[in-house]
Length: 438
Image (cartoon, rainbow, N blue to C red):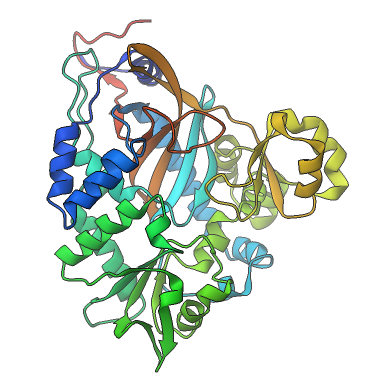
């Protein structure tokens, strides 16, 4: 008979992350997939040679029960974010552009988790989360392990379909009341040719082109707002796929884009309101404060999920500076509007000088949640890499999940053997005759 045991699934995932050394990424298939793209040689060069640690050769094993808990945490957060009282609270400290309410939902929200022995813990939410299309590329170039005891298939998910991504952007377009065809999408980031994720921008450009959508990759300074439309050169832009880290569109370079957005002349996704509601890290202090949750009218069951499933977070404020300093070794410090681990600090490495600088701006301090690990072989040596998990979420639904492997303080895409990694789901059911070692 089939045996169901939640603990066995967790135990087996941990064991496989330690013992399975299969190189499941098929590099030859990866090159074939890239070569089939427009500018395939350039993509092969950028991903395989120039960015050798963007993609890991190994998969990461995650228990089905752990993934379900992560989805439960996402659902609970979404319920709170939908509350008018919550929105009023966070918009009070949001930039003015976030108070404009578009109809578009916002593509590719990224919910990032660490896995500790007590269960998954959300550490942050991002609104322009990269890697979704890289993850789809990985799914096309992975082989299931055959030579070790894992022998698990790689999962199918919503984002194994390119059409799902196209449908998502089409939905954003339709939600803003547009009946005509979506023809021109601008993929916008500051100096995109210098960005580490440029290969993904090119993959998006190719994907859009396959579906009849023109998609220039451009710096926001290349955009102009005139005659009631946003223009890239002589092309009127319908929708902006926003990869900027100026989340409120406040800098001078973004003013044409901001004006067009506020005028309803272009669909922007994700948009400033997404960041204000989801990704400002001060929000995590609200979501992990039982007094605030009670005041917002959050039901007890949802409160329990949030308080157990999100790393406890506080705002760093002058009046509590002495207490925070004393607790610093158990904390991780992040700027409220930060991204990509920039200006983030482990408390045990914090100096008095840097702490003084932190007190002068908006920072949060988060309970330090140690990431779990994935062991692999590099040049006949056993190496342990840290890992985190990212869910790509649209309209409250987790579409797919990937892992990121790294060494050091934070995810960096500079670690040999590290990078984006496919997730293999370890079921809680053991089939007849299937065993797991202790």
